[in-house]
Image (tube, rainbow, N blue to C red; front, side, top):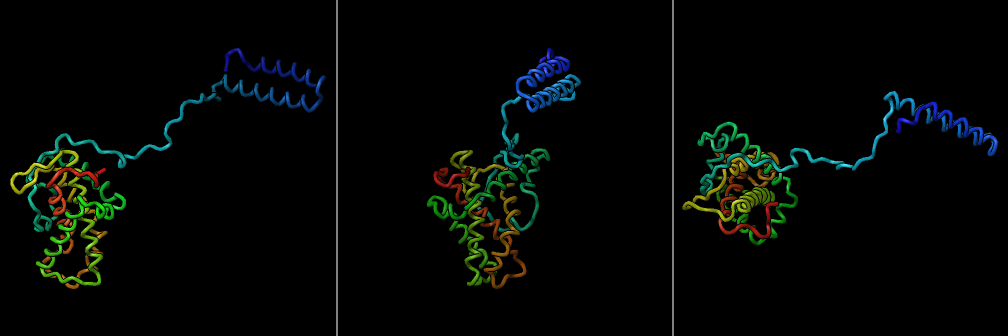
Length: 266
């Protein structure tokens, strides 16, 4: 508001206009002019005193800002290359931190785990993951192979399967295997075709953290489906181990061949 517009000026103009309105239009119009003028004078006084400010309309920003968990986490300062051999179920029997034998410093472990948590969230929340994998001829054979190996492992350890619940058990294993395939394809998209040292694939340390994080996140969700297909289990074998085994096996199998074309890790 201009500094030239002061309360006395507004009141003077209001008086002149009200007299003109009374002579020409009558009492109702005069009352309206007085109300508008007095209101304007009050607002001008409050503005001068700093009690009232006129906000300028600026460009509107976005109404929603993504939370931290919706953004891509920064790449760790270092993501060491490690060798990944064909999984053995004994590797998952203990819940020790991933790659404890490498003696990584605490800061790097924290960065790798942070990346793994973000990637885990995106993988386990991917919509219709199993149907998409089933429709992809490039990925589904690895899922089937991982499920078959997991069932053979279960029988080898004395687990008796229940025919009525076999479908639920197969789906639980297939979902875990599909998540492993997705993680492998993500690795291939980032690094290109996998390099091999004999029977060991060269992956990243963050992948080992992600495998453990996915297994931990899905264990409670999928255990009821696993037990639905089991008639008898031996006391010396944990049924939960079938989930990380299926995931890691599918991950290992999918690392062979070229990066994906259809079933993209997006």
